[in-house]
Image (cartoon, rainbow, N blue to C red; front, side, top):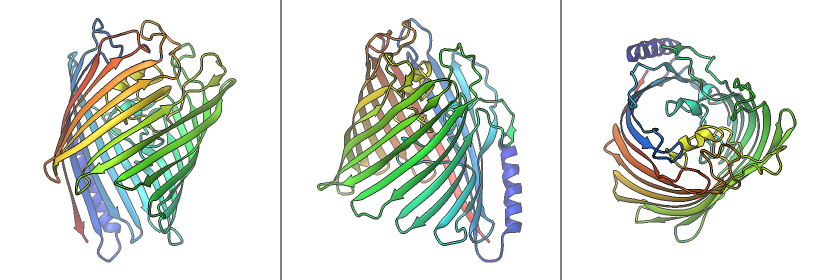
Length: 436
């Protein structure tokens, strides 16, 4: 698989080189190999009696190039594949499919100064990823891309972006290698929106957004417990970060949602968070945070109104790598909804290459889960989540981390046994450029 990727990248590089105009420009390239060893148990139902232990190694390979077509236009192309070697329970290992992780044209100046356009497959991350980061929650950690067009206008330290997204349930826009027909999400998703960022103020940054999104084409039968009929949802909100005296800062984000799901259910939901941060040390390498995150849930007493927060394009392990699998049997993997969390976190950097993090969550639901009592209880306490992580950056090429998470379930779940998630990771990356 890797040699096919390399051949395609070399062909692309040669083509773009021939098309480049005179004058010095830079052709950029890169390679990354990441290896993850993961072990977990009890994170689906918190029952020792159930055999859901998993041990696996995940191998992800990425290759990418970026080349100028003209002084104002760049072309980027990236390829990726991730293969899982599952040894508990033992599963035969085969090379997984390869795909185009990125493929976009970036017009850095369009007609007038400050106007830009990026079209194609690209990674989109806004703010802390509370609204936009992940386009393919079902492909694990292989990719986060969106098929999108972003028209931006920047003036000074303020920027307005108009964003269009279409992410189908299965990739149908670009070729795949060793095609496995992977499902990327439960339904098709399309969205239009505007995102405004303002950094003109010395101590305060502001962000505001409005999005319209459609989710349609769930092929599961209507009798399936997690089937979702076609829906549209509007999301409006904003985010701010304000610097306070004595190395403190205050961050907050809040959004409202409204819309409709067929045939006759209204959507009324909200999500947001706020936290206080304090940095320490001469270089402000250490910090501590305390805050609350909330994503509304549906009230069983009003069945015609959907109160569950829709995470739009943020179904990723922002708060926990292991807990996203617990969510699989509610709405879907990494579907953060009907959840409130108090969080305390501290990061200590004893040595520049080494970072140590400890995090504690007290988690609850706004309403009990209305589904199976074999998995869920009658209460609203999701439980306590404990996390320890160490990151080591050896140099610009080598880095790695160790992560341990444990979850003590509360009354929201029928199971009462602790679940855990453990991961070690090593990655190697190199980048380069050639002037021509």
